[in-house]
Length: 324
Ligand code: ADE
Ligand code: ZN
Image: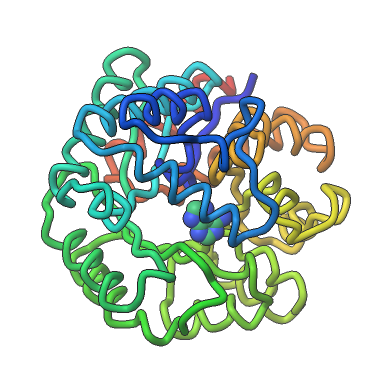
């Protein structure tokens, strides 16, 4: 089994249905509109976000979030992951009644618990939510820039790509960049190549969340390869959300062949009936990748990780030992 690393997973979206049901019982909520027969129910991006927001609202205390992060990172480690970056959302935590700092400290506590059990390294990328508006995104950036939490190493924007304009978020990203945070932005998932180009032009990210619809413009694919921008690809998410019809139509192999730096990620695993392990299995089965090629993807992810040099060298060392 190749060692794995993940750069793109929304922590609220990593809560399994059983855990969400337990939280709902704790807070006296009815899950039946959103969870049926043990699975999340939704049919398009808007209803996916509704189920996601409903579930997020059931994580309200520091212990709820610590347990969620511990749960997720421990399960990742059991599947062979040595590194995990989670997207955090102070906006969701705020709606559930927790301050950004209490939320971030709690997630950090959960990550520390998982690391103590399994050795998995983790970092947090604070995200602003596009559908929450520019002011909320700038607030998230200001928090990320000043929070000083040692595990907060990046800033990103997620949410409904069909809303707002990337140019509107330039200031938020500048706040984060000036604070030394790594930059990633969701683009080219629900919207086409123009959105990826706008991200490169206006935001200048080190990484793009998804970015896969760059495939619609070969010149742009060349630019991504030349500039070394890393794509956080999430194949099962893309199929579930009907960005592409099937794995056979997914551009992952074409982007890799064109020289783009691609990585494998689960996005919101239980919503898309996946896991990081399953993404690696899918790459083996549908993209004809052998263990050596999969190990190279893990190396790309670690190279692109928003983590200090010493930790990165340690993680790369673990890959070298395994590869020998
Ligand atoms: N937030 C959680 N999952 C997301 C996705 N796939 N795209 C955009 N925002 C998200
Ligand atoms: Zn995402």
